[in-house]
Structure formats: structure tokens, C-alpha cells
Length: 308
Length: 290
Image 1 (tube, chains in turn brown, cyan):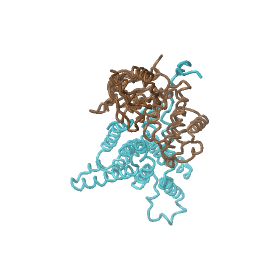
Image 2 (cartoon, rainbow over the protein chains, first blue to last red; image 1 turned 45 degrees about the vertical axis):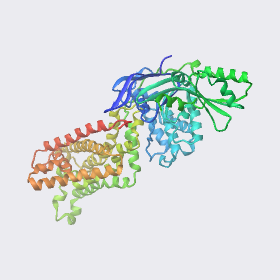
Image 3 (tube, rainbow over the protein chains, first blue to last red; image 1 turned 180 degrees about the horizontal axis):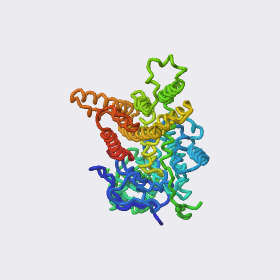
């Protein structure tokens, strides 16, 4: 499948500070999450992808066209920057129609597109208020509205959910997912991992300007086999069950919770351990009430990979 | 429901069409926002007061018989000539009013974009840095031309209407061009100067103070240097003096300072070049790491 966004040996530095270091990356259609701590290089990558920064080395293309110094390409790209980027003395509606002028739409079409985009983010009722009077969540939503108003094929969203209340987040997540179902490409960055989890399972982990891992969350897990997984088991007889397979080579460490009903096993081979656990429970006739994996989330994956 | 991969991606395969004047939305926004600023309309109206006074004097000069009692003491006041235009257009009060209007209109042109990181939004659109700067310059050009070129060329027309003949324009056919030339000089110089100031900070208030401070401090500094070194070349450090010196040449009049106006043109051009370089470096998307 053809990559929509492609970076080849991309490097960017700011004086002596390295922003991105030899990043080669292909992003296909659908939603891709770009994860990393602050200063990891997420925003640098997004600015390179939106042609706002010139790469020191390498290239970045969207739809096969280089983004640097190709303003025309931005008819197909919608960019939502992280910081606020407004003229406070404008209304939300004016802000959008003003930005739509750059695409050469007629006045009627500008009004229609602005109204439609504001409707998507639930700001129709506040469209004629000055942005100065908008709450943080409203500002975030109007910023997202400007991203989609010109109907782009590719959305590049830098921390789009920050500042939104839970309801606003849920709504925006739905909107972004709708874009995926329309066959568009969305690259979304965040350091709040549950937000990305809610959007996509396809992630790119970035740290200190380098790609740590890329793929589905389960693929990423395979990449980190050197790190132990945690499995929490709640049972009617946790010590009896634990005794049955404590000698299993797959077990690295075992701890018991103070509640007396749960124990946590650390293993390098989760699948093997699940098999042995089931066999032990069956052989001893011990009922397993619950099996969970407390580190089965993006936060854990990220922490493993960056060595925290 | 089919998944995205089953549907296949709709690759965009259109032609990238560039707008003819991509800077126009920037200019329109800048002009519109200027009129929303508190006090701007008053300053804008006040900037036409020299032209209005001039219009009155033009009328009186052509109806001298009716106003004999008023002008008995100072006949020179009504001797309308290119020097008369130059005196008004290069006068301190006129330049002050012009700069006042431009401060309202331009102090925040880039400062506000830097403050709100709007450059990221602009440059994620079909817009080049060059178009952005042209758009901002166009805002300043709009106000300079509307305050200088338009009314003062019209005043030449009024002079002809009041006189009822074409003697004046026959005697000075180059005068409208002089007015336009001076307006272009002001547009170019003030455009670069004000954008440089606007790009020097993120606070409009700070930039406003900076514009006035640099403009008038240069005049004070010139007087101070002249006091020490007793040389008229000291006025080369004064922005208003250089504008007056260059303006005098464009109106075919004797320059106020006893040195070649070429030096003033060079100083003004140098400031423009320096401003252009600084603007090119300053106007870029906000860096992630500083």
C-alpha cells in the first residue's frame, strides 16, 4: 500500500540541539498515533510534514510531493498546531472564513464551509462570539474546525485533545474516527496515552528524535520481549495456585496483593504462562476469578521502551 | 461496514492550483482588524486634517479677493506651488499623524502572529513566506497611499477646479508624479521599518512604544551629535530628517540639510535592506526547541 506521508532519513537540528535524527517513516491511510514525551520530536516531525520547517537532511513527502516550499500541497492537508493560534478580536466564524480565503473559495462557499466545520465541533451557537471570550475547550475546538474546514485528505493533529473536557474529548475522538472511515489519513500526536488508545492501535513511538517502535500495539509488544509482562490473577486460593507453577521457567517474579486474593506474576513469555496457569488451575481444581494485565496499555509500552 | 483498507484509499489526484494573489487574505485581514482597534478611526480621520487645511487654503488662494482681510499680513501663505505641497507632506505634524495611524494599523501585524503562534496556521496553507510579508506590507501600503497619494493628488485636481484653468498643471506637470513618488518612498520605507519593529516583540504595546521611540529618538540623537561634532551629516541618523531630505528631492525643492540627498536615500535603503534580512529570519514557524 502506498504511504501517504513518507519520511526518508529525516533529520532536523536547531543549533546544537537535535530535533529529529535520521527518521525514516511511512504512514498509511487511517489513524496513526505519534507518541512521545515532551521534546521527543513529535512537533518537529509534524512541522516538517506540514512544510513549516526545512529538513537539514532527508525528505518528507505527502502524496509523493515534498512539503517544503510547496504551498499548493496544503490544499490537501489540514494542520492543527498545539499552541493557540488565533486573532482574539475575530469571531470564530470570521476566523474560519478568513483562513478559507487562502484556498480561493467563493464567499458563499467560505460561509458554508465555515458553518459546517463549526457545526462538526458544536460551536454553531458561539460562532459569532469573539474568540477572546472562548473557553480553552472552545478554542481547541475552533482550532480543530479550521483544520477540517477546507476538507483536507490528510489531517495532522498536534495534541488536539488537550484542554478539552471529557465530553468534548469523546466527541472529538468520534469526529476523528469518522475521518478514518471516510478513507482519510490522520496523524495525531499526544503524550496522553489513553487519548491515543481511544483513537487508534497503530502507533509510532518517538523519543529523543528517533523512532523507537512502530506498528500495532501488539506488534510493539513483540518488540519488547526483553521486558517482563505483568499478569494479575484473582483466585479463591491464590497461594495454592501460585505454588503449582512457581517453578515454571516462564515466571520471573511473583508478588501477592494485601487483599489475599490476588497475585501478580512477571513473565517474559505471556502466552506460555497463560497455558501453564490454565493447566495448573485445572489440575488443582482452583477457580480463577479474573486475569488482567495491568501493564497492557500504551503507557507501559512507552515506559519500557524509553527505559523508565 | 467495510474497513478503510477494504475500501481503499482515495488518493488525491488533483492539480495544485496556486492563487493569483495569495497575499490578499493577509492584507484584507490586517486592514479590517486595524479599523476594529480602539481610537483608530479617530486617528485615521485626523490624518486627513492636513489635506483638509490645504484644501481650504487652495480655495482661499483662488478666491483671494474674497479673503483679502484675512491674508493681508502673509501673502506667501497662499502662494501654492510644489514647495507648498512638499512643506505640508514632509512636515513634522503630517508625518506624526501618518506614523500614528500606521502604529495603530501595523504594530500588531507580526507581533500578534508571534504572540499567538499564528504563523503556523498561515504556513500550513497555500502561502509562502514571501506572500505573508507582501500581505503585511500591503496593509501599510494601503494606509500610506490612502493618506498621502490619494488626497494629495486629488488636491491638485481641486486646485485646477478652483482655478478654472490648467495653468498650474501646465507649469508643474510632474507634481502628481512627485506626490506618488513620495508616497511610494514612504510606503517602502515605513513598510519595512514598521514590520521590523512589529517583528521585534510579541506585545503590541511594546512595539508601539518602540516605533515612536526609535523614530523620535533618532531625531534627538541627530541634534545631540550635531551639537557635539557641529556637522550637518549628523542628521543622517534621523529618520524624519532623511525622509524630509529625500522628499525635497522628489518635489524638486532645495533639501533642508546642506548635504547630498543621495546619502539620505542610501540610509533609508540601508534600513530597508536590514529590515528585509531580519524579517526573513524572524518570520518562520515557531521552533519547537529554543
